[in-house]
Length: 134
Image (tube, rainbow, N blue to C red; front, side, top):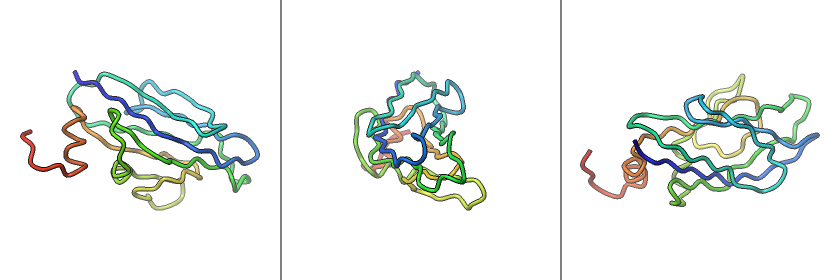
């Protein structure tokens, strides 16, 4: 079992109402958050070795509200801050093609970041820190 900590700095783009998101890892233990100001979403879990997907999605976005959105300003994994982590994400807006490495969540549909556990090995590979023994 391996520790996993994720922090995502979020900024709302206010519409008719405050953006509300649902988030979780692999669809389990989902939680909800109203993004009514600049804030940090934090998640911490102990995970077995394997492949995982962190997912978040706007759950109160309506097509008649063109302005509501959430901006991902920064991602930290295990306290390591590097914008490179967003390149391991994909946004799947409804009725559109997937958008890789997208930080502006403004349509219904999940934003996903794929990672593996143990996460320090994944970080090492994402940041291209050199050779590693798997």
